Image (cartoon, rainbow, N blue to C red; front, side, top):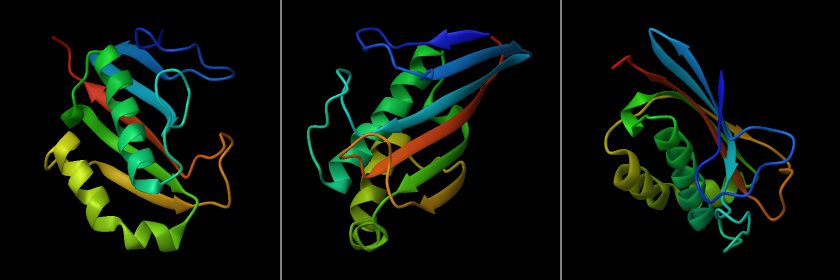
Length: 133
């Protein structure tokens, strides 16, 4: 098993950004990624930019493990503000298509009262299966 830390990122505390497990290919488990940058700083308190950054963070961990967006087979989204999410859904869809194309893995959307990292509004976790070379 290999713990993944994208180059230039601060080491996480109490979790791994991703775990790569060898098999006939690899299963990659990507820890919940919030909308902060590589220095663990939130550049916005708004849901849309946080969602975009969180998805970019998922894809950075995925790329570090040798994967591409189409390798993601499962994603869970945790969001703190259902009314805001519903109000910006089309914008989030545009971000999704820009970064993921038309690939839609099995997903769950869960609304929660709060996230550990303040002022986080959204957190994404994913599982990817990367075929053997």
